Structures are given as C-alpha cells and as structure tokens.
Amino acid sequence: MSKICIVMLCLVGLAMAAPQSAPQPRALQLDPVCLLSPIADPTQNCNNFSVRWYFDAVDGDCEDFVYSGCGGSENVFESEFACEVRCENVHDRMNSFESAESAESDEFLRGK
Image (cartoon, rainbow, N blue to C red; front, side, top):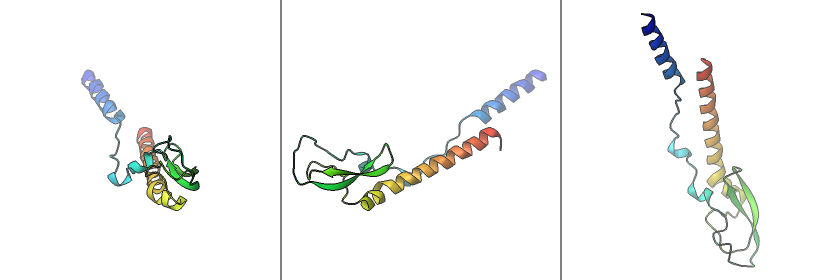
C-alpha cells in the first residue's frame, strides 16, 4: 500500500512540475520587416542624406540613423511614429504577454 502511495505522489509531483506554456497568439508575432537590417546593401554609396528611423529588434524600440538615400530595406521609416506603429507597439504587446505568462507560471510553481 505504501509503495502505491509513493508512486502516486511521484506522478502527481511530475504532473505539477511539467512546464505549461500558453500558445502565443498569432496577432502578437513581430512583423518580419521589423527584423531586417535598415541597410540592405551597405556597399552602395549615395549622398542624399536624411534622418530616418528603423526598428532595433534587440533593444525593442525605434532608433534614428543617418540614411544615405539608397540601399535601404523595408525597415526604414520616414518618422519615429511610422516605425512605432509598424513594429514597436507589437513588440510592447509581446513583452506584456510574456510578462503575464511568466507571472502565472511563478504563481503556479509557488502553489497559489
């Protein structure tokens, strides 16, 4: 009888310790454009300089840079606002989703 109880306790413990992750909603996936380098072909040398914006996927925000006028990718925006609308807002929602998921996991592991 005690062996059965021990086996049952082990199985319950394994089931409780198994990681449970919620699937990420498709709407929160980062736009592939936001992952591109702002300069598609750095070998091109142009002289039509202006300030442009690109999404830095590592830092998770829009950064400005001096754009030469050619050789850019789709991750080059004329304004910070345009960059934020396309990339940063989705990135922020992804981080909020991941934070909420992590908090739920912590509560589960603490037995709340």
